[in-house]
Image 1 (cartoon, one colour):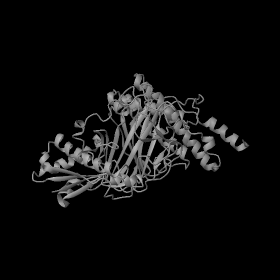
Image 2 (spheres, rainbow, N blue to C red):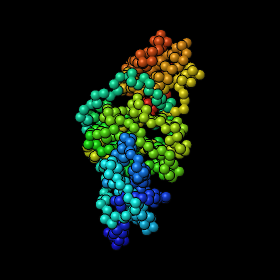
Image 3 (cartoon, helix red, strand yellow):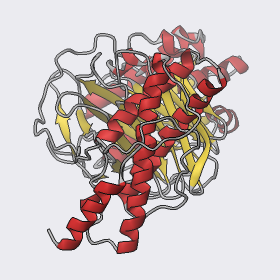
Image 4 (spheres, rainbow, N blue to C red):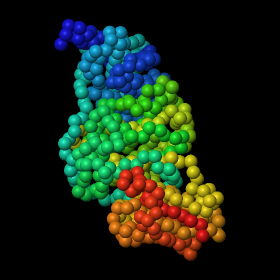
Length: 512
């Protein structure tokens, strides 16, 4: 190590000495970024959490007691802060080769961030224990910082054929619970990946990451799954570069090893971003995180960041999705202009009218997993589908007399409707209930996998399954519905790709 690097390390050792005492004056968030990704991300996340805790510390100072929701937010923030503190970037290595001025700026910002983080951890614990006493004067703690930054980037487990010990016993139990499910996927496919064309053990071909991840297959769960590796600022980004104003995102989630010992800070972040970089975003982003911990119900967190500063939304929405997390849930997201909605299975947990504060700037989708124990707790996704919305299927059916949708999904090789698809069936039922004179022919189509005869039969069976759902769930008279199937004979896209197959697996509704 050269003399400059040794001197720089010694300066950092002397400078970074965060306080442990209560704050009377708020630590100011740095206004500008350094330009070193790891430092900027750490500073931003530290101050986001600091702002939460500082608010509740203010409640304590004014004598206001915390309610149950406040306590939940603090508990969740404490878990995130502990994980963030453990995974602080290695500032010496990250700044190697960077100019002297930028190194100095980075050091000062890291100093502020660690000071804010340490205050937040101590204060959150005291608030939760009812032991918080806010001091009138701020005293600097001269003790040496106990923070020991270390690289927590997860390495590949190397095990690509692990079997989940127990098959979830209540995955997609029944259709009736979905009868009021109002999610409707978009009508134009933008991106689809079920990883069927990828090799086990490889990173999927249509994705990028700054860490690792691989395709795995299980002996008790169908299909190929993409394992998202957990770690500090690790991202998995699908090859999708232009999101419209109205679109939907869907994916299946699978977990292994999560338990009552899983950290409260364990989360899956789904991020809409303005940049194809390994960060939340440069100037704009919107993030929703799903809790993975099991020992208590934790909130679904929402946060937006526009024009280089925190947006209006920084909230924790009450949610107990512990059972869903362990039972292969289907996640659905709908973005309509500025409105953002999220469903876990049939339940809508997020509905924020102005979450997307500026239109036409968020063009990338990112996944980030954080807070899991490497090799013990694991997260997988499958059937990632992004579709452009904007067409009301009900109005189109009424005006044009025909619609085609690939949003009604079935189990592979089966006529069993996946319950999360019933939002579309519900819309069709609304058209039929609005006008008693309408009769429909339901036509099923398949991709080219399998033989011609089996696909023809499958397409007919799927059309019949949709009819049965309309009759049995929505009480539509059976004599108003006929069915047919075309198998693979009328493709609308290339059956040689996953995208094309997804478009060819469709259901048509035609007015008679």
